[in-house]
Length: 106
Image (tube, rainbow, N blue to C red; front, side):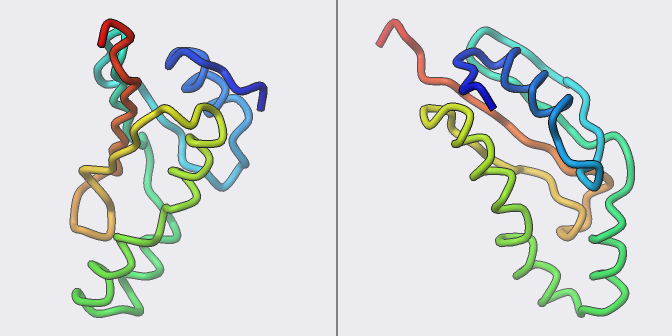
C-alpha cells in the first residue's frame, strides 16, 4: 500500500484501495496528528449479525469484528494508534475510527 506516513495519505489510500465490501468513509475531524473518520452507509454484515446473534454476542463480536481494519492501518504505518469508539454492533448508527500519530515534538 506504499506505507504512507501522514494521515491524509493513509485515509486517502484507505478510501481508494479498500475492497468493495468495505463501507465508504468520510472525514469528521482532522488535526495534523489525528483523524476521525466514520462510515457513511450501512454495514450489511453487522445487519446480518444483529438478526442472528443476541445482544451479548453482538457486544463480544464488536470487540473482534473489525480487527482487520486496525491491522490494515498498522500495515500503512505501525506508529498510528487506532481506536474504534463507535460500532454498529454496539448499537451505534455508524462505525467511527480514530487514527492518531504520535506527536513529533515529544
